[in-house]
Image (cartoon, rainbow, N blue to C red; front, side, top):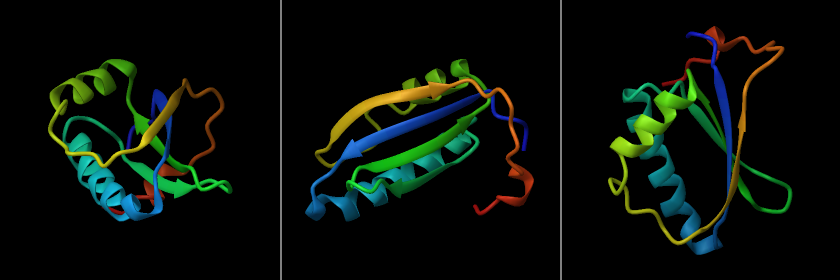
Length: 102
């Protein structure tokens, strides 16, 4: 895997009954975004119950193009989307070649 040029941190508040559908949609969307240049993502939960995804991208242009190409493609359950954090990596000590899951 090439070094990510962008790390995106996304957060949502999702009602408990909508979480299974949200997770399913997130997984399908992540796999689709990988086809369009995304370098993968993980979904977890913050201590307050907020869902948090950390996604790796080669650059902002690839991310923007992938999001544009998939606009309206997925039927997301109702959720409150919090502002994303878009981080340009500086010092990077991730060992991404050992993280391949899908």
